[in-house]
Amino acid sequence: MSSREAPVDLESFAAEVGTDGPVAVVGGRTHWEIGGQCPEGTHLVQAPAGVRGFDPADMTIRVGAGTPVEELDAALAEAGQRANLPLIPGATVGGVLAVGRDDLHALGRGRLRDALLETVYVSDDGQLVTAGGPTVKNVSGFDLCRLLVGSLGTLGLLGEVILRTWPRPAARQWLAGVGDPTELRRHLYRPSSILWDGQTVWVHLEGHEADVESEAELARSLGCKPEDGPPPLPAHRVPAGALDTGGFSGDYLVQIGAGVAYVAEPCLVPDPAPAVAALHRRLKAEFDPRGRLNPGRDPLAAV
Image 1 (cartoon, rainbow, N blue to C red):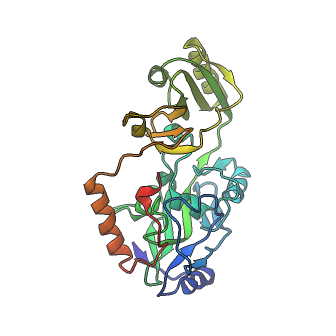
Image 2: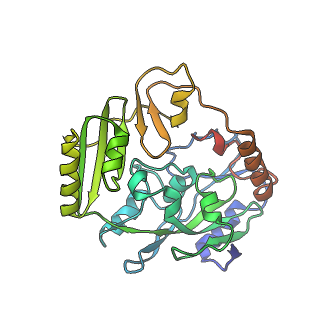
Image 3: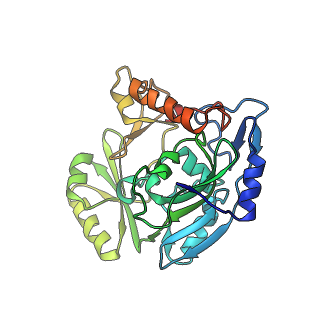
């Protein structure tokens, strides 16, 4: 982590954040109420937007945190690449990183936090700080980039990021059937997603055409048939462990290998372990001792 001389728009962003008073970044408001609501009187700012640099051969892209994820995806598609960010209409790059929710393909593509290589953020005292570096193997010590993903902007306000990119797959296919998701995962090589509702299992394959067809043939031998896509997601996202707390009933969909489930009706979510809660309080005290960054938000409540 180090300070850096920043472009004018980032310096303007830091100046708008300022050094005093409660402040929050506004993105696309697609997940605005996750983790709690900012109190009235909070100063709202917007992060810089736009693609700043993209070298397809390097497989990294630099963008303003206020860039819509759909704009990012369109820029990468021209070079046959993608970033492992969920494509939520209207959402911004900084917003999805701050919320930190993996999409349905985390099993095969990896976690959202793995996509972030470097970020320039504004600290609680209004300073621009750089964390990480523009290469895949860039960390020797504390990996601050991963800490910022999912923090809801309570530790620093994202202004600019460098993301790792991946080739776009040549072929994709969803299949579904009645079966055991554990058995399907054991036999298939790196499916990008496996979903299960207690009876039916859905699997998504992607990669080279020959590889996808070979894996699809194996999935068919295990009772799956081609599907147009995944099932509709139930309304509420919870830790998969919430299904085991007792008293749960209703429809659900488990995202295998991601520790996440979607349920039709709200259910009781276990409280975080005391050690986890204490660690969150210590981090907040270190990074934002005055509590001015995204006040009212609690990452532990952002299931």
